[in-house]
Image (cartoon, rainbow, N blue to C red; front, side, top):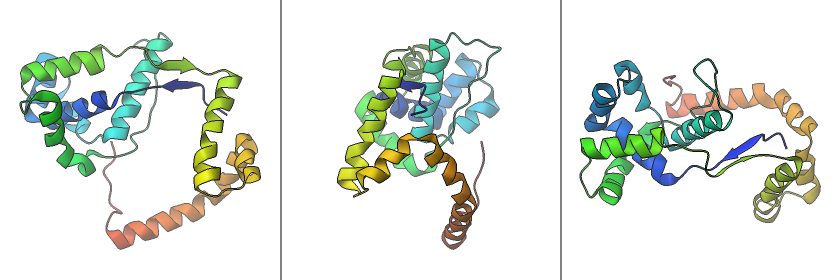
Length: 189
């Protein structure tokens, strides 16, 4: 119920950006042809598909609200690229005919980044927020067995504010799982 905007991002954009950011040809194109800082280019390869989606949604949002170089928009890198390494070859085969070259890098830049528009973008009204909230009914009530009463209370801010009290316990559980799995060491962007 607090959603201000919704931005649709295509899988093709995230998939092809993953290739651009994780191949030598793509990185070279970004540095030499687009003048992107080499240090930044090296870090772009850390972004997973959901992080790339968030980045593109942030670009769409900035364009929609006419934000400029003096404005800041913040998004979250929610996953890393390490889990998608095997997908790069699949995308190169599917979307680039088994050959990702400088032309393909330029096309990817142009289509996914420079050509990002505000298509599939909506500034939310109260009715829109209710529609989006109600989309959760199937997942939570029908599939997960949450009662309608338990689901409906999630429309109120007080439900979400109350979850803050649980964060320390969740953090402790996450730390315990990370320690057992060896995943406790992460690299921040």
